[in-house]
Amino acid sequence: MTKRILNVVTNVAHYDDPGHETGLWLSELAHAWDVFDEAGFEQTIVSPAGGLSPLEPRSLKFPNYDKTAKAWRADPAKTALLENTAGPDQIDASDYDAIYFTGGHAVMYDFPDSEGLQRISREIYENGGIVSSVCHGYCGLLNIRLSDGSLLVDGKRVTGFAWQEEVLARVDKLVPYNAEAEMKARGARYEKGMIPFKSYAIADGRLVTGQNPGSAKATAKLVVATL
Picture 1 (spheres, rainbow, N blue to C red):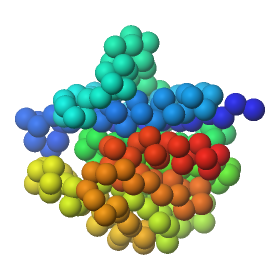
Picture 2: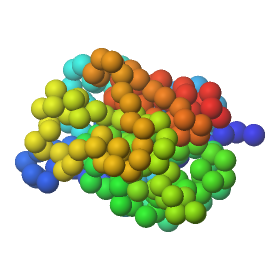
Picture 3: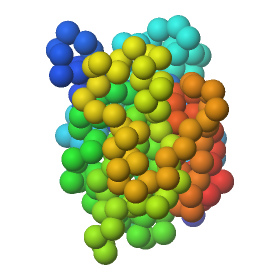
Picture 4: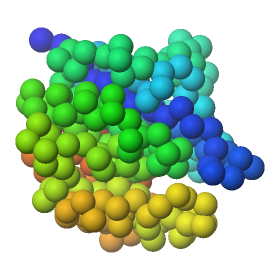
């Protein structure tokens, strides 16, 4: 039976300061999409509000804008997918084997408190499926509660964009909170790779997470292997 993956993207286009644009980090979707596609999985894209998912300008510049991301933008059918994403109320969680939260600083604003995404994630996980994220996508995991009221990440090994990486990327003064600290405050056993911005992905049972943009492919491969 064909596996089905639900990819989550943002609807937010700027930081609290409107002068600083943000959005979906394109390679984090494109790299994973290719891995899932090669595995023969069917894919859908959802966002907290449905509709347009804007692109993070920094993800469209060297060295982040690689051939995979360029190929996505050059494909009208794929760009159209980001112009009209589904909303959570259009998604039946029982149709999916895994959910994959993409990143970009924008997700820090609209992922954590999306009750629709929390519902979908809880149902996929409790149906025996996989919840996964890459980079800032782990902000979408912060407030997911299981049916017994416990936090999904409590006691679990988790990685995601490190505070050290925020500082090195010079956005530590722009971001609305410290995602690494918030994850630890929820009882997660946060870990990171030895070298900033290098690929690092881990699986704790059916929870799969990757640290940064360079980890998208490894994260997706872990999802495939776990499935």
